[in-house]
Image (tube, rainbow, N blue to C red; front, side, top):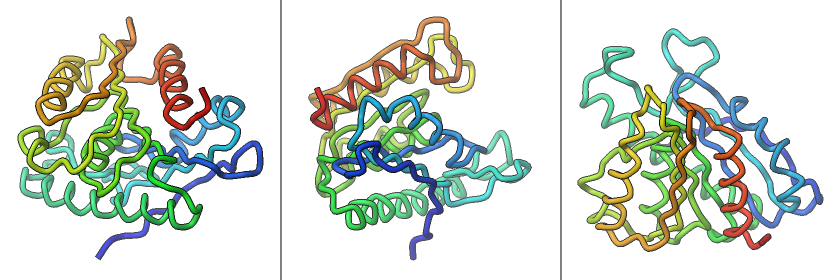
Length: 222
């Protein structure tokens, strides 16, 4: 049984929903963390609904914070607990994406997943394992959660933009070329990458601009 995800929304500037960007926040944050990006993007994507759910699990020691899965060196979770949590949260996220499409009368090619850190990991996990490809994935400061199973489990190969700060000391930037290699070997054709020079574990201005151009192209604005 899936868990319902609470979400914040920013309606399309035009008043008409023709696409949606689903933000997936990082460990210990919540939907408020990324929904503010909608203010920077809305004028350039006027027909897009921005929606930012809280992850399904409360994050211990971080009041008001949520997680998609625990982190062993932070909370002492076992690897088995991490894997169970990823599987459960993946089902919750897939159900949430389905619900957005039904509620807003959108097709998969009208939806983009935009994830940061742990949210980026979930986006990379969810998108290839759907029955129909969504418009695209923006994964910032993330990594592949289960790289060895991607080739076998991938059903679709959505266009994917990987962004990483070259000074990231939380999720090392070396994860980007690893993800590219794994995705290429699995059969992905549209893989794009951008290095945020001098940036740590964050969404830098140049990264956001690259993400905006990617999303506009994938959603038919460009």
